[in-house]
Length: 340
Ligand code: GLY
Image (tube, rainbow, N blue to C red):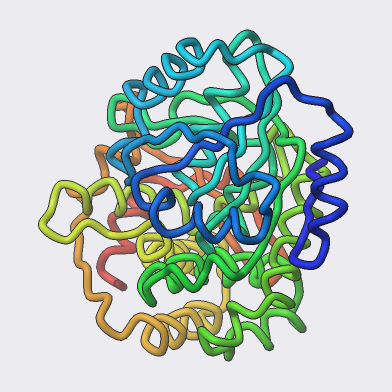
């Protein structure tokens, strides 16, 4: 399981790295984190002042095989040996891709994640999923490989816009839905400022960790973490074809609401959860008015199963009670659009 270090635990974090006696250490950054986060990182850890960086382009469009190849090329050019460490300093796109490149280079070298976005702190930077998008399918290629550590420092959140902070808040809302009535009843009223406090970040990480620990390979209970994501990913992919590409969290906000409509008709779920989610959307995302039709998202939902008459998704019949692999017919899906 991931070793997670928080602000204040820098000495323990450095001791872990030193104990491994690496021949070389490199920092992977993107164009954005190179400028905004690397100086902050080197300020927190002056002993890394002279560590060299590998720089890749930023953004979801660059979560691709070409950029993974670029990282591998750099690793070879720099003669990085098996006894080396890659420090992934960035958001989820960078930590996913850097972890993949490290987990496959020379059959796997050590890496650790320093997430610089809220979404990467509470989700992508731990749990062992690595990968990149392929042929338009999100995270199509990847491995399960745990980083040697994750270091969480909210100082990096100062480099983010409000839109990117809100992006991460949706995964925290999702974790609260999965945890308990008590946590949900608190979380549903949090302001963005409350959500980004270190205590709430730690709480959110602990919720995901407690799920991942039971099902690292994602064959069962871990699929609960996919609530809102079946429809959400499809909305996100479709949005890239429009003039208003959504951030992941924005699409998942819409996906969570849409999937509750489906849960209401397929599992008889009470509409209260959907109403609470709509209230959160109206409070935190007042300008999120992205619209989509079934024909816009169906191709992404069906992917390679073009003749299928159903899809499967993780649905939430009640708080802290998730039903994975729920069969939803295309008729049910169509019906849900009339209630949007
Ligand atoms: N982001 C969902 C998971 O790690 O399984």
